Length: 500
Image 1 (cartoon, one colour):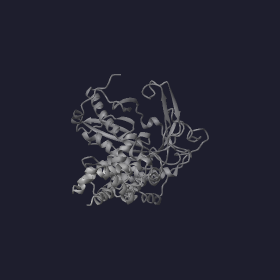
Image 2 (cartoon, rainbow, N blue to C red):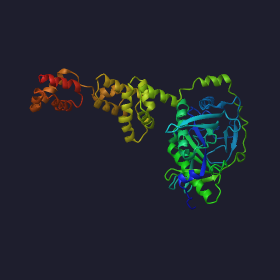
Image 3 (cartoon, rainbow, N blue to C red):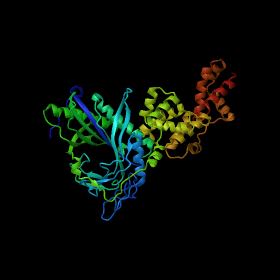
């Protein structure tokens, strides 16, 4: 198959109007699956978290997970949706190897939440309102592992393995309305929306929204219409895009590909496509089915869901401060510039710093630790900042030890290294490594006298009034005490011993 002809992006937006639609699947972090009691632990041994219900064996019956319903309602409320007073599940019929029942239990024409919106702020401050068509509950599929070949995909693989642990894990699918009038900013709008949605759902505590682990996945729907025509084009759906950057790149690529097809006088095929991370391109998957192809019908083994108004209002009361409102409050309280706030957010440090402040640390010191030394450690280890094996409370304790004079900055970094190495709490590392600051005057005077005797010329300069020369003696004392001396007190003693 020949490579598609692509049109320059600027040329695309000069002649075409892009129309976006985004479908985001979010795995809920419930303890058990959507319709059975199997655990949902990520990374468990394959096929160890299954039962007759999630395997679709004859005679098994599903039971709805109440915690998943609560999470769905809270997500709908946070997205300004109307919560349906009555809804039901349906069977979505299709065959795929990792779908053990040959149908997916999902909500079709009666979803839990409808007609909402999410206001998204772009980098320049522009606010775009993204309409939410629906948020509905369903179950995830299993996972296929294609062995052999160079790509990890089924094409070229020698054989495939199936892990049904994920089959039946609760999912919420959030579907936007068409997002028109984005023009050249369509890729940016898509990324900003998924970013805001991820932050919102994380704040609700209903999912870890780890795109790298598949607990949040985005399907990008895109079409082009001739500029100003208002005629909707044929859409493509790029499936399971698993990073914010890739969402943006997928939109951009599909815009240039669609334009190339249309300019050639051909028709865009309504199909699903797959995003190629290494080349930032998409490839054809399969012709896109319509709802009729899935032969939806009401799930006969589940009763309808009818959340009472009282329950909905009770759940509304559990909603946290919205992430963007919280960020604005924190920026004002900490007196951060826009650039400082942006650096904190981009580094993934804002929540960590806030938790460190809540544990008793001043905001300035908390920010300094997370965006400098700890960020370097995360980069060295190749992990996200929040994956480091140190908690905000532990960082706050290190800061407290420095503030009290029990540690200096150099020793504090060694304490942090010990915590990261699994040596225990900060106080345990201090004791285990013998890192407490030496503040006993007797020991310090001995070290100062020894350093002065070793450098008589420097001592003479200090006695002659050149106080700046004391820095050399301070350095010698710090070296002799392995960095554990109180540098400020050492300097004071040097001046005293030289008759200052």
